[in-house]
Length: 197
Image (cartoon, rainbow, N blue to C red; front, side, top):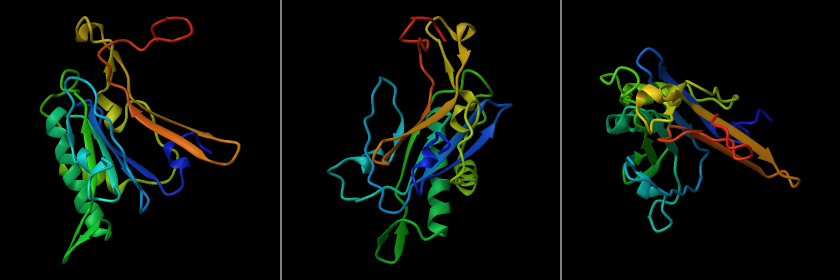
């Protein structure tokens, strides 16, 4: 076990990054039959297709999830992931067409790098094409390329954050894993000591 989301059999993760512009996107390609779920919280959320993850939606599964920088512009990355999946024959068959089910969520990174460079369809396609079952690169990569924390008192006080992943294996062999792009308004604090990390 590598300690990443890809420890769950069948999941693949790929990144596209522009480190000079401090932005990127991350694609999680799910194994067939994956049932999704979503909880959108906060006062400035941005998503595309998140409603397909709800329990009352007619779509029975999700094919991929996209995390992207670029604020609302970054939602365009999902279109490239859909094109990639369609080429692979993945998606919900609707008459003569296949419609890949892709949910996307964005983060605001326009204040750290070049605000005119944002992940779009080509970058989403590149991240999907790069997706593997190998251990997931972490830090300033993919959607984490422009992540920062500690912005309460302005960007001059912010520190770099990024994307991370972890997994645990239970005694019965069940694997639980997570992948998160941390782009918090406040600081990240060690809960044991109260020290800002």
